Amino acid sequence: MTPFIRSMFVVARRDFLAIVATPTFLLFLLAPLFMVAMGLAGGMGASQLADSARGAGRIVAIADAADVEALRAADRRLRDAFTRGEAPPPLEYRIAGPDAPAPLAITREKGTDTYAVMSGPLESPHIVERNAEGSSGRYLNLLANQVLRDRAAGDVAPAKPRFESIQRGGTSIAVQQSLGFGAVFIIFLLTLLLAGQTVSSLAEEKGNKVIEILAAAVPLESVFLGKLLGMLGVAVLFIAFWMIVAMGGGLIAATQVDPAAIAAAGKAGKATAALASMPATGWPFFLGIGFAYFILSFLLLGAVFLGVGAQAGSVREIQMLSLPITIFQVGMFSLSAAAASAPGSGLAHFAQIFPFSSPLAMAARAATDDAKAVHLLALGWQAIWVALVIFLSVRLFRSGVLSSGSGWKFWRRNKAVLSAAAAAQAASSQSH
Image 1 (cartoon, one colour):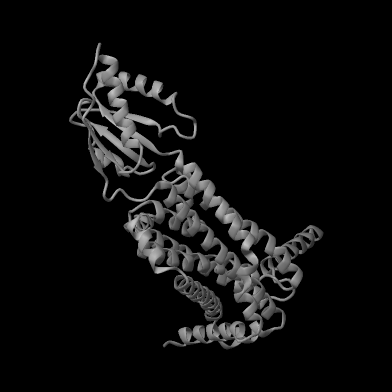
Image 2 (tube, one colour; image 1 turned 45 degrees about the vertical axis):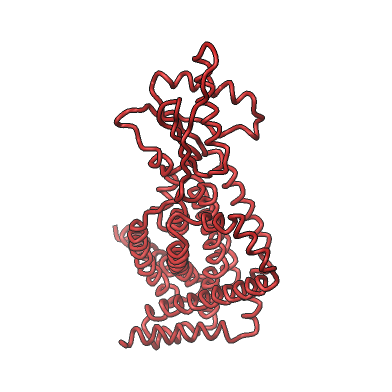
């Protein structure tokens, strides 16, 4: 390895061991137990997202233009017989013809849940439904019968529908948006818990002059990147610890479940329903890309925090810096959570492009959009910003290390320049 990379890994190993090889690290690992309230808040937010997404469901009727008004009138009368909570989803109409989309294509349209689609003549409609045991398909059949009765003067033969269940209809939009919000919340929580510690770490070493010794021995860039990688190693260890705890708890819980109950649940179709509750990109890709976005979010915010922390020279200044840092993180979380609740909107696109909210918003997009190539572009875009922030933060880091006092070297340099300019102007006026 080159001396630069070797120095970087030496600093990373030093910072990693300085944090891990202490008794207080156990308290750090157990910190999530003291953040149950935040977990409950996240669950409430996901529940609200699910409730709002349920209102996006619909049923669709592909009918001739002459039948649309009759269907609309029959739908209006039939809905009056339902209570507010039991009414079927809103009914949308598509005009039948060569340009009309296929029923299966309508069920795959993004942004809303399509529970059933009716097409063909009203006497023998073709009804495609998401759930064979649901009521949306039966309601469309009832609607077709009502129109036939309204048109007939006497008795009329009932419609003879042909039902077709969607075998691969995908996951509900409500479930996918809840998964997206969960990804945003977990990345935000881990970043808030782990990345913010770089501020106090660098300011402490700057106060006791240790950082100046390191800066004299190795390039400042190696010190900067080494500290960032060391904190990333601590973050990965933290995540691995809790993943092992969760897996162990799951195995213990599985041993306490009656095998007969598991078999009965499988016969009842609950296992199939659980498999259907999955992100649009699939669980392996969703988990992998979520971890990649966490790393980029950590590196991006960690680089910012290191650059800002290099300017702090006391505990008081660290406390003053903590407030805007926390407000900034909460702002990015709020922006990404709003994007998760409105996929495909202008706000969602802005959150996915803005560099500091992009990792969170793109993780939420992986839950609701099955496109995968866009994530490669997003990772490249975020990597560019990580490099840019590191470049700028290293300059601030160099300024903070080589200066004394509060560390705002740029301000003191500008002040000295202004003082010199004022003195020169005064001397010039005296000479005149």
